[in-house]
Image 1: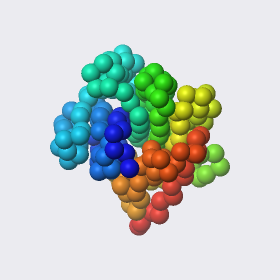
Image 2: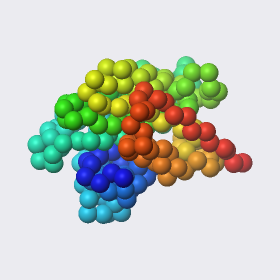
Image 3: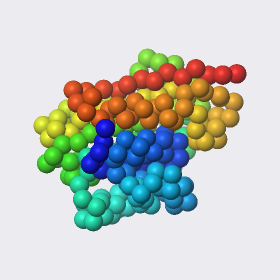
Image 4: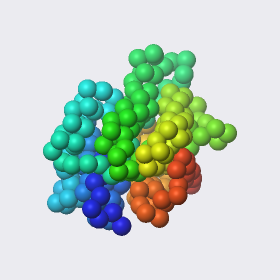
Length: 234
């Protein structure tokens, strides 16, 4: 499905990002996997095979993101697909959340997504491309919110809004921007933040929706935020 395409996946060391990297590689894409954790990146690349490469990068750091895209554009050709899966998931009551912690979560989850999208546009605007951002059901208006995850909820609401804004602005370049908003997913990040939750939704299932949004069968889809609901086991 993605033969000849180059894809960048942020947060590709584990969880949804890793599952997306593996599935896109299985479908013929050359994947570039980015994360702050070099050890986890190496494991993803080893599983993805010879068409995978890694770049250590903190998406919340604008200078690091610019350096990453300089490498991608200068040494590794163009970019067809971007999956923004890098995120942090921290829990605390809002009245107990410091400004520093609130900013940290926004910097990685929302601002980081914006920075990576902006830099990717420079490589995609001449030939088009597909961008998939990872939001969350927590960031969708009208759905149930859980106490203790306010800063995360705000960040993922921002990702959903950013997706719609970029879809409108970049459609003239042939760049489609969509998002996936899953409920609780069975990842290490969730287990650390909420060990009492046992979701049935797997990273691989989320990756399958990502694959659809990256592929030719979704060529008419732009500005969508696809909600994936998760049944919680006790």
